[in-house]
Image (cartoon, rainbow, N blue to C red; front, side, top):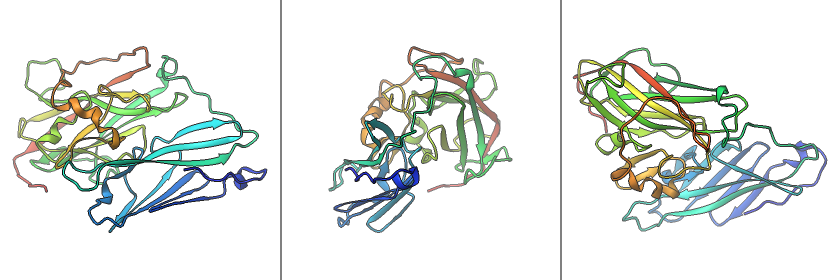
Length: 322
């Protein structure tokens, strides 16, 4: 669905809000952001399952979901043709296997008149190695609301270990951050002879199959958040979490480059594009592999970095979580 292009000379005037109305869908394209409302008459629809690109609803109520997002987020794709500048995305709904309302996808497009002085930003392309020195990786333990670092290193069994990973990008083409592999060990050295507990394998949060662990909604493409339920691994001993962080082309997701978690009643869900959760189909079978350390770059400009968190201690003070 396309908006009419406003006439005028200034960028501010060119980007006056555009209103789209189609059945239960209303999209307001602002200067640099989008507000989308989806209202439904079908009582069986769970509006919390709607996604706009890689973003979750900003708010939900009975029969309605609202998104308030920036055009620079949620995996909006930009296309310039002639005098038109378009931002394109998809509103998707992922229903359960027995739900009456089936999964669907609907295009969302904001169109503007291209300013006369507009030119694309110059980035080092993702399919070359240029600019990889400008990628800086971070991984740390966070508070429950991810508002800052978590200072305590003790977690009662059943509580949640909140982890945030991010990549800073200076002049590189915008990239999507993924947690490719994560394991827990009892030593800071991954190659030791001690026990290894798998957490994420080939982008699949395998811990979510047997616990309430999950990926949190993305705040931005360059950051990924994980809520890991404290597990029965080396209770009372020091535990280290090793992860391979992967910066990747946002449009290049496939069965080996993804972020999937298991949702009870729905199966494996691709957090960045739930409508294409078929990419998670191998999570129960052929995606398994053993993590290796190091930094590697392939022909598509993959950038990996080994991240380490710890030591932390899981205590046996059981705290059941719903």
